[in-house]
Amino acid sequence: MSWLLPDDDDDVPYGEYADHAVRQRPNPKANRPRTKRRPEHADALIGMVTAVDRGRYTVLIAAGADPSDPAERSVLAARARELRRTPIVIGDRVQLVGDTSGAEGSLARIVALEERRTVLRRSADDSDRLERVMVANADQMLIVVAAANPEPRVRLVDRYLVAAYDAGIAPLICITKVDLADPEPFLGHFAALEVPVFRSAPGSWPLDEIRAALAGCTTVFVGHSGVGKSTLINALVPDADRATGHVNEVTGRGRHTSSSSVAFRADTPGGIGPDGAPADTGWVIDTPGVRSFGLGHVTGESILRGFTDLAEIIDGCPRGCSHSDDAPDCELDAAIADGRLDAAGAARVESLRRLLK
Image 1 (cartoon, rainbow, N blue to C red):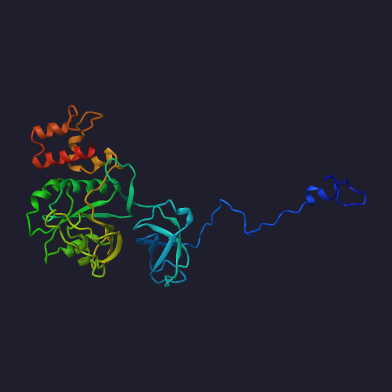
Image 2: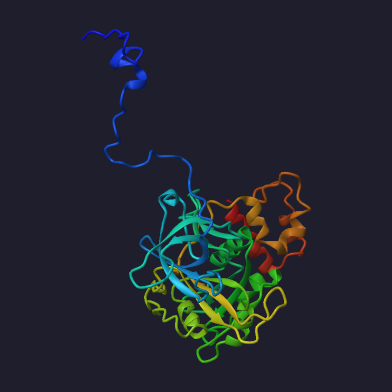
């Protein structure tokens, strides 16, 4: 091939092979080039995730949130591609675009996650540093435990308390089946924490007291399988229709009946919210029953926050004290020896040291 020289009479200065005369090949897909810029979605609606099922999210759009359609409605949504590595859980506030009508067969798109106020996490076990986000934006944790059948476990409740304090969530305790055993020796382990306690038995649920505590709050229910958590939720929210199970007579363990987390609206007529204003509704989040609750992601400082009854004694420990059972000059040992801590307090110290280890 030879280059053509420009002709004197040709307007093209370098012939037909001039750079500015070369035609660019058209895009065969006829689409715009990719860009890192993302749309701002200024018209996105804000909703609360109430259920998650195999990559589909049920999102509640509150009344008045959509100027074009002020009615409250539930919308089915999928997450946008850019959020595929972002965990979206019950209680999250998300931004929605697309078909937000809530009509059958419609599918909206989650394009952004609002900032979370609180995050409840757990790990598979204490050696696993990978945290699993369970619930977002909860205000309270109601720990449901049975007085018997299955037997209550002090250390499991300790773990729930630590997770609650780590997340900045206020803990509550509901002890069920008090007709089968005296709950007071078990509750004595937590008396110094001043955690509100509700006692219940078949036909004697403290529903009014619990509803008053739920008013204006989002409360996550946690507990061992078989303690009556789903039964309690069905009593508080008749439309919940959560499956209930039984306790194995041989193993003494409950059978998992709740397989996923779901949020329900609970009516609290005449309730007063934490801000002192009337609150006729609260949110209840049911979680699957667990037999273990890993705290591998929680630091020692967070664990100490869960034992507020020991805080004053711990302040007297030497700088850098590990508070373990072989720590030199640990004030916890001195408090047990001189009687400042009774048998229940000594059991609390044992739980603390087990978690720190």
